[in-house]
Each structure stands twice: as C-alpha cells, then as structure tokens.
Image 1: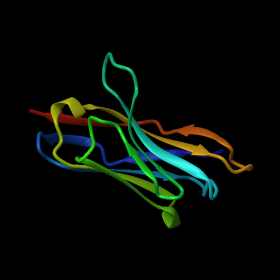
Image 2: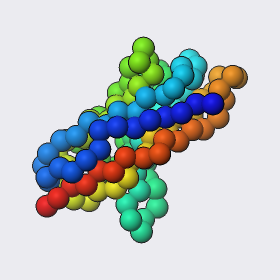
Image 3: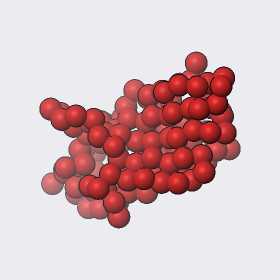
Image 4: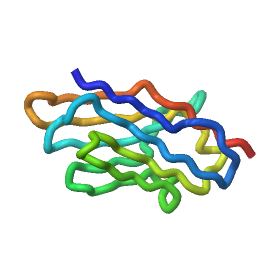
Length: 119
C-alpha cells in the first residue's frame, strides 16, 4: 500500500511564501503523475498543479505564475513552492499520486495539510 505524507503547511501573511512537501512511502514506479489539489470550506476540491514522471507540469489558472511544482524521485517526494500567497489560497492542500505501473497501479491521496493566508 502506498502512503503519502504531506508537510509544510501553516499560517502565513498575504504576500508570503510556503513550501509544501509530499513524500511517498515507496517508489511508485517509473510512470506516474504527482499532484497537489486544494479544498476550501464550502468549495469543491480543485487542481493546483501536477507533474508527470517526465517532468511535464500543469497548473490551475488561479496559481499560474505564483506556484511551482517539482519532484525529487530519489526521495519519492514532490514539492509545491507557493509564492505571493493570497487569502484566497487558504485551503487544505492534498497530495495525489496516480501510478500506472502494474504493481502499485492506482490513485492515492494524502491526508492533507492546512494552509492559511491572513490578510
């Protein structure tokens, strides 16, 4: 079973920065997509950013130019660097992994980490 553990959330003032980390308990194979999603109170979960095993990235419109996703496969870790944070970025941020290799094939979610941006 694959476990994803997020860290790095917290309280920050508007305009500040945070870096989130998500570490997988195992190497989930050579073909996968790692990503970050967020859910604010009363809203649906939305895409923040994804990165493929080939390092192709995709961002939600609201974070383009402010957030950067990256990965370190040697550490089974994906990062989300968040700059120029706004109060609207306040949400629980979830890490997601989609694994396409046979042994760990499936979708996995972390438990989430709270990010609060004060105005």
